[in-house]
Length: 90
Image (cartoon, one colour):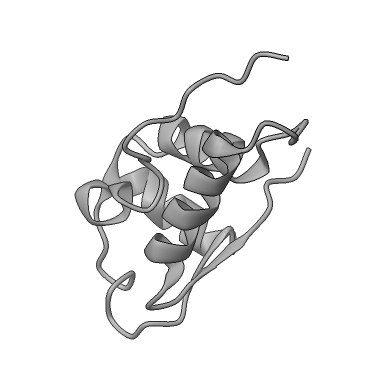
């Protein structure tokens, strides 16, 4: 099993939230890929050590300077904690 990587840039949080919002309001999508990825990463990251492990294994790539160089769970949490992810029923 492999975990898809994510390049963190200035607009990453905004893009993720917009994609998740689009998925949540769409009635014709079978899979909620961004919502599922955000939920998975939110469950995976519980501590600063988790963030560093994901960085070392190139799951999270930093392209915005020092932000992830000394990042903590609370700093990365907003990327993967959507305000409301609901389960989609077919």
